[in-house]
Length: 488
Image 1 (spheres, one colour):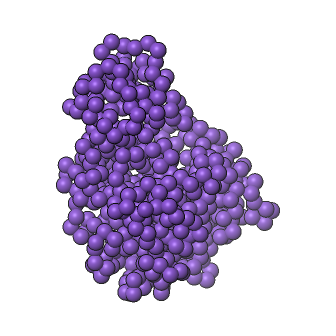
Image 2 (cartoon, rainbow, N blue to C red):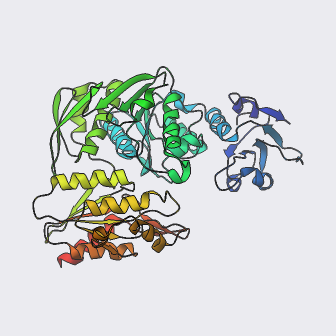
């Protein structure tokens, strides 16, 4: 077990009261996870303040307390450490505790509003196919080579990240591909990590419930690139109007990718249909299994990052052309008898929904109507709710508004806010069916042979969160069952 002084070595301004040589068995920011000889780091969170749980942590066996303000009463046998910023200290302590695993790996971070999961997953699959041992940290799942670990957050907490990376080092991994959410950057969950590169996909309307303003959301995303070291690279989408902003202050190698503008990695879409994409990438023509312009950008980002990581271009294209994207991202299903095309997608922002619907409209043939099932999550950015409804109505013949993950909110109130953005003509296109299973079944019943049905918002998720309880629910399974019933 490492000594306390050793895991504080990179924490600036840390002052210890008590035994600095005391051995530490583990780290925790949740007092309920504390065990004997653990260090408990009291972090001020968005919901609760860890400083109020110091007593509970000691009861559970903590022998080290790290906090921004120390309690007036001290417990014998417990060492106390005062720090300026507990949130930053967590990552720096975890890095030292686990032996600085990110220094032994090539850790690639992917950030942006949309496309993070697909880009990180494609990179993982690509390098795995190329014979590398790899790790993945994503919204859908975490993975250490073939071992799959269920993900609970887009980016885990700092201790969990370092533990995962340490496991990856032990498993012989050389590369790790990681989604980096704006929440994780702001909450300093990536403190202590050394990145070899970062990708910016795009930035659109999301998470304003947390960041409050769009400018702050952009600033937080940008700070990830500001923190990259000089031996890393920063790869940005030159076609996003804020793409170049991400590179303004970084000391990393600046690189770009684009379908429209001059860029380090240049692409052009030649064909875009239900069989996939045909593109010119870096001067070479290639066919990809993935569909849509939004995926063309994801593919360019993956290609560019792989080249920057030292893989030869033609080798990248040979493998990438055979890969599928992440689960729950434009997954297609066909009703065998009625030939209704079902698409399940994680699109839960106005821009993501617009991208998916624009792709569907581009690919459909005359006479095919688009039926969209969509909702908005509870306890999240409320300002996007009416916008989501407008996007769905403007690009679909029929829309069924339904519950997503209402969480603590009344699902009917969420639907009211969505409907509030619609004009009289748009309102005639919608149905309100709060029960998501019934909404999907109704959409199937409304569809004519050959129509296209989009179920948006939850994608890969296998639950629906209502009043603090996660009930089993999988859009893909519900849609498949509805198709079977329809075809009987």
